[in-house]
Structures are given as structure tokens and as C-alpha cells.
Image 1 (cartoon, rainbow, N blue to C red):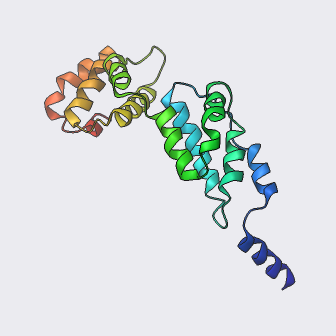
Image 2 (image 1 turned 90 degrees about the vertical axis):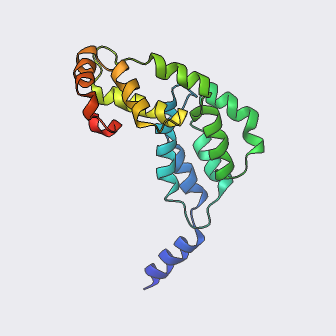
Length: 174
């Protein structure tokens, strides 16, 4: 019975500084790469760990733990803005603005020129395209279909073009 009381008391107090320190060893390094996909993967990992820190969440300790994984461009960014960010929500907003939401013009340039690289699967190409669609806010199904057909391997694109009249949504191509 005493063990249960101690466990409940610890849970109510929330995470200890040691819990945040342990988090430092689990978060993968993030360099601030200009690859939006890498930023999204890193952020998804961080969010999954944040889920463990619900009771008496300490923003400062959490931010210290996760930004300890920053290198290169990300570290430079954090050195510049770190003192102005005090909450998870502020971090999330500024991180996304810097690393996930590239300029619309840059995203559209990538969308117009993206091609399935030799040796890459259609699934990989689709994943890259979906990231760009999200970043550019593309919701129009016809636009998605056109961009997919123009960038996928030419043999696949040719077959899809022949069936184009039957394609109503981007998902129909999968």
C-alpha cells in the first residue's frame, strides 16, 4: 500500500529534472536541414515524447532537453531566439515558421520541378510530394493529380494519363 501511495505522489508531482535529462539521450539530433521532411520527422518524435510529460509540465526543462539535440543551423537559430521562447506553444510556432513552412514560392518551385529519382520507390516520391502539397496548401485534387503524373516515372505517368478521365481524386492513383 505504501508503494502505491509513493507512486501516486510521484505521478502527481510530475516529472523530475532527471526525467528531462534522460530525454536528452532519446531525442535525435536535428541540424536545421532545409529538408522539410526531416524537420517534420524530428518534430513528430519530439511530440511523441512530450506526451509522457503531462502532469506539472515544465516548459523550460523540456525545451532545454529537446534543443540540446540541435546542431549546425538549428543550433544557430536557437542561440538567436532561445531566450525569447518560454513555452512549448511558442517553440512549436517559431520552429514550424523557421524549418517547416518554407516560402510559398520555394515550395511551388519544388512542386513544379519534382521528379521521381532513379531507384526511389513510388511510395517515397508520393511521400515527398505530400509534404510539398501540405507546405503549399494544395487541396485541389486535379492539381495534385497533374503534379503527380508530371513527376512520377514516365512509364507510370503515361499509364496514369491514359486513365486520367477515371481519376477523380489524388487518392485514386494509389
